[in-house]
Length: 254
Image (cartoon, rainbow, N blue to C red; front, side, top):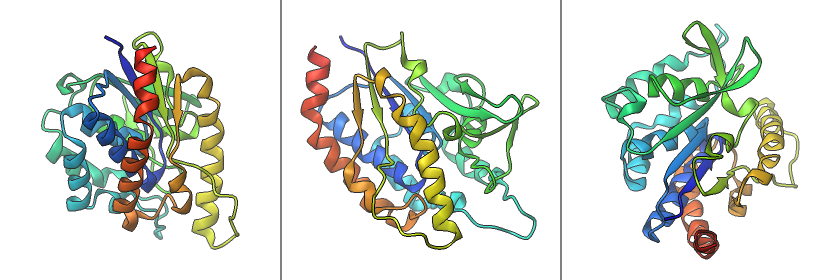
């Protein structure tokens, strides 16, 4: 049986599209043996690997408004504390350890002191997810074992490397197609555009490691901070996932 590994990119609110795409795959009987993820992809991967269905993950995100706590906002004190998300994750990851996962998962983050990408596949799931989603300037770094970590997308927004040698075929899913009709706006839009271009450079460089690279073009019209449009992006991911089922099945049959 062909082992399929899926790498899920970061992308803020656009990461919700991952849930829809994976739902389409599972409905088509495509079994995924291993996941890797960065930032939003790490959140989605953690829930799926813990055993939640795509519909349950989406309902969880909507009901607890998880992404509300990941929305950029500046305070007088400067950096916001991503630690406020811990209590939310604790409700869903009762056993906070990678050994509780039903499928293998590797989460990418950036070691701030060493200036390099690092992977988590053991220890606390919650710590790893928070470290992977700690966007610099917006959130304070997350401390794990004496080291400070920030968003994994800074250096590796499509962590395919941990899949190499562990699966037969690799599918990379990027949720950050770049629209060509951007017009400079306020500080937030400039920040988003800059981050998008920076993380996409390292994501596109990973195409050569993928047997199949997927990117839903319908996401071009959405911003990474448009959390109020999460359901629309979920549906775009789902419909695109159904469109590419043939490609995925052909890959498995090779």
